[in-house]
Image 1: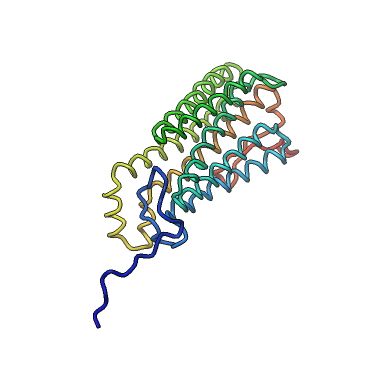
Image 2: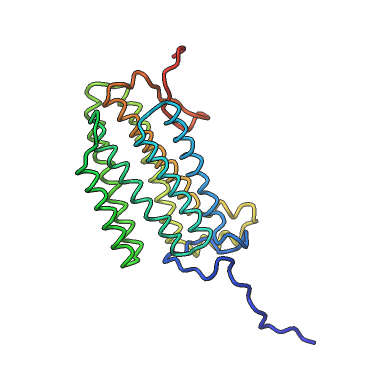
Length: 277
């Protein structure tokens, strides 16, 4: 008896994709439970750096505003994990909208870096209003480019105000300026490389898929360029928060009690001065 060619196709584990974006990685190829395997697991970079950052904030008794920054980073990573694992619209929102909220906390930090105490209600309300407007508009129009522009505006504000602070510090504290420049350069470079690979992945998707299909399974993952976006943005986000911590300590005049160190010769963090320093 001849076999039928009309065998039923097994449905995707999480159902039909409802997200407004489906990235270049082929779906459900590596694991039947994960739509985009490599785009999912690379969010471990967000988890590990955010948890490390929270631990250092607590162990060095720094301000809770930075704990919120790292918690936001962790939430972004979780949202991105579930988005790429399921390709469901609700998890796409859980990935994209926390990026806006987390960056608002960073904007508050950079705008209030030189204020010794107190909470600026007007800045807080303005940032809350911005987040609310972005959320409501995005839910209505469902255009990813709107989210990208809204997020880009926030990054621009952080970069401009951070640069202004750096120029002020350069006049009085060259050591602090040099170390802040290292953190600034790391963050910009990580975001820049990640953004370049993100665009290449979008523009040349068909070419990349052809390359991956021609390569052995052990080499093909190295051409999953959106996965590098997660690693690069995790490093950039982490470096930006450490930069804000450093800036705050300089503005408070307490940086002499701390040192900028590196874990595994790569990952910067702020630690308290030790007796042998």
